Length: 290
Picture 1: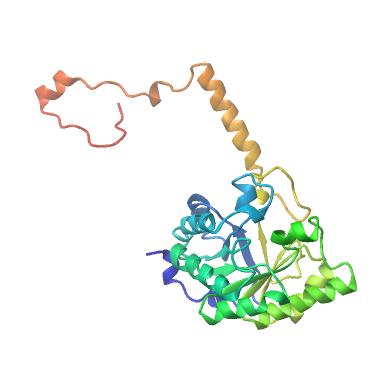
Picture 2: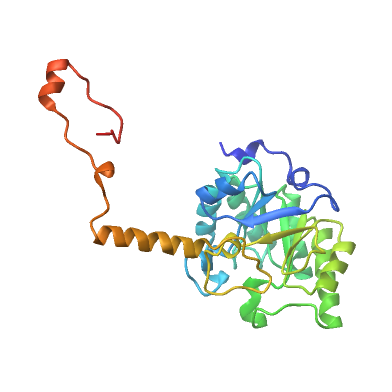
């Protein structure tokens, strides 16, 4: 049984609107989920896995089966944090019943706590249908990576009055449809502040300023593990990519110089005659010390 099956509802775990700031990070693997679990309020199994882990050019190319595999790995290793799985492109936009069927698969097969969908007012009926079935939904408005191919480049949103009104309308529509929280991505600060004030559920910012009720970043961005590009809104808290490269270079140098493995890493044969004479038993440990 997954640890998430013992958790309270997501609204209790994230806290009330206007409470302590909500902390979120992405997680795609069991080791990372285990490390994050004690420190964050929620982990997003994001479709960003397409770019971060698989080296794809866009988030639109990841499929549902792959998202479910990563969702399982994270949910198994999250005993405290809320686990939210992104619904990938093409699995929820066209029909509320298709969206519901796919969301059920995610929840049943991963043990996650919620799903996330990108979209504004046009997606409200779908969100309402999925929520009515008892599946918690996190919304996502503003800059929507799954729609970048249709809308153009990764550009911040809310610079015009028309665009600002549309984003606010999207947020309110998704909140009314029953989303328990809404990711606000790449939205200019005054608009993010207005959305947060008007929205009855918590807003989670990513490139939307401190005005939001919480924040999320891609873990590999904030730790320096993903270096292909660095969005303006990312703060690097570590440079693990450089540290990993340093460690790999040192290992390669040791191997080529025959310094590794050393005597302390090498198994020596047992003294069979002595073992028989003393009646010593075979050591059952998988990696016995010599």
